[in-house]
Image 1 (cartoon, rainbow, N blue to C red):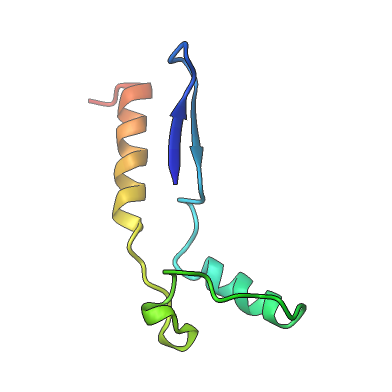
Image 2 (image 1 turned 180 degrees about the vertical axis):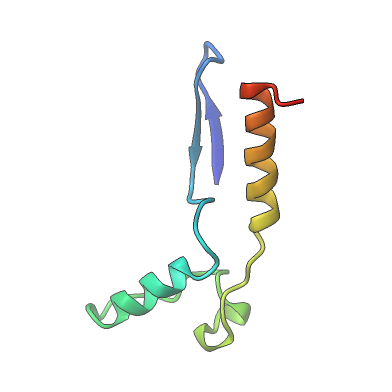
Length: 78
């Protein structure tokens, strides 16, 4: 994930998918496995890179913090 701002500092762009549920990529991975031969296991997504061990959910707190900070800055909720 990256956060980029414009030179004017009036626009911010966030890349990535912080809104994803913990199993969204897992669902997409298994869907694509049934359609194509070249689907690779997503790196660092599953415990020990093993789809049978389920996804790691390490981004949720960071996503919530980023959204809360952004909302506080934009709306001034304090």
